[in-house]
Image 1 (cartoon, rainbow, N blue to C red):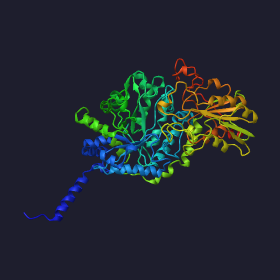
Image 2 (tube, rainbow, N blue to C red):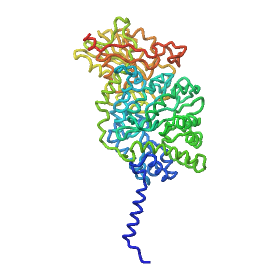
Image 3 (cartoon, one colour):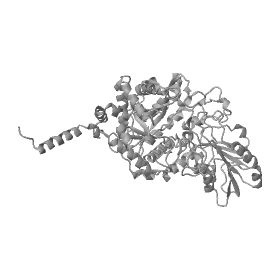
Image 4 (cartoon, rainbow, N blue to C red):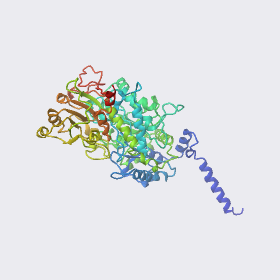
Length: 636
């Protein structure tokens, strides 16, 4: 037999490659979703599958690390950024560099990048920072054509999605749908309310983040509209807001019916609205760590509720399965994966995680069926998001970061989240709305001219930070913007009695509150505001008519000072748009907000929630005085 012509050999090779490529159904967007998933899964090695289940920190990531270990996801923890005051372009370039590493692998599976955009894209400098959830829960009382207004949080979700996409990121660990039952909990400001019904209504932020589920879409199936939307994450599953004494990451002691009726309902709404992922709570339920709870993660969430997205751990969540943390890491990996966690936020020691999980599978301690279930779910979300078709980010949405339209939306949210708790020492002589034309007014307090205090935790840094940390409007600046040019505005953070006597102020605006905090660092047994807040209230309000604005992540101790105060406003953690406060303070808009949390008299009463037999609040759930806008008053 003679030699085969080189041209024929080349034709055979080309045909083989063409046929093989033609069978790569996972690369064909016209193929049904399940066909693409099945095809890709069948091609993956164990190493590639475990890589998909691994989420590592940006700080330890590189294109080489991602391609070597087939890493499926990257996370930016709070404050983990490309550089100080990084631009949208810097973020995009970083994300795309990581993505190139993922696409260079044998199968080219794109990675998904996750970040805690919990009140706007809050890690990014100059992003719009919306009120934290504790304030947004108040807005459910605002009536819009005789209907409650969860549409506001949906708009906030859509704006947040655009600002996250503006930085090239695909995935946010939001919303937190915890039902905070004790304000001593350091994460209470991440909760919309003590009432699960309000939390349920606020899940409308999910279609804002992800897009509206089409009418003909499979029920309870993850949905993310590509390009301008992001994958959302309902967290923290489940019972994180009900821990004993409000201690973070602690034990929630409650029977099955209580868990089902208080802490679970918002998950049903989230799944119905197509949420792509669910994050597991650090906390325990009746002594059982949630990260190791098979009955709730696999038995209830996946099997009973038929959740088809992927389940992700919290950061180092599996480490905490043992006490002390990482006491037996191999066991923790085993317990977490067998419980039903699909993607593990490692986030640093990824080699150890990958090695341990690989060994557990090879020893048949963890069956391949469990690995395949996890990877199938991760791939499902990636395919639905369109990551395979559009893995690389571009600058087309960069101008959305901190856009004026989004800032106006945040300003509206601030207005609607304010709760007026007192208005005048005599109900017949209300102090608010304040006059814009006065000879001289005083602005005082540690939070009056501090954008960091105004935003709280999860802003630029993980724990937030006092000071001029990002672009925004402080309350002092907002006051100056709101009053007539002839009105003299004097700012003194903590004025003494002599200063107050020496000046003839028409009235004073005192802005005090909590300093920024997160998670366990925010756990508090006394719920007091930061010093010298109380002395500032006392000094100013004894000398001049005053409105006190409290900036806090929860109700705080205020009862003994209430008599001194002429008007009291709960402003929560309003974010960057302080002008929303003065919009209402000076009467361009009326106060409409109603408490979504019970305001206690003393911490000894806690926990105390609406419906409790010992209910004796300073201000009850649903309380809030209203005012009319000045224009409306003038026309009457």
